[in-house]
Image (cartoon, rainbow, N blue to C red; front, side):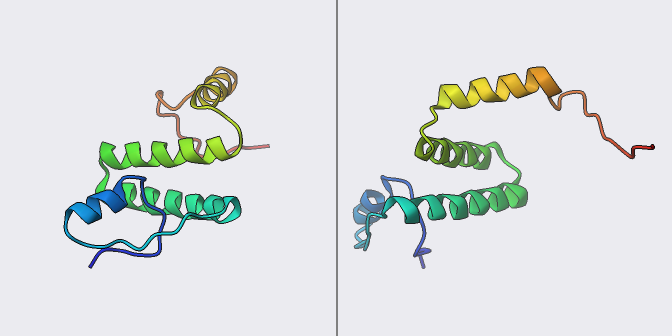
Length: 103
């Protein structure tokens, strides 16, 4: 059985039709869309944590791009924010693990 009652990619209804099934869809209002994007992000993160593959990371990125678009931020602007933060605070490539801080 196909999962229902969740946000799906734009082409999923057509893919379902091509399989001979009939999808029932609705177009969300902006408020519900934002809520469903947050739920979709949680779903995709959980799938990544379970499967640990790059395809799931790509799904996470797609959801993130949709979320920032609802905030009026482009993919380019998001990457600029990421790079700014990396310049100010660093990245994760050095594998630094903070054990504790003493006063």
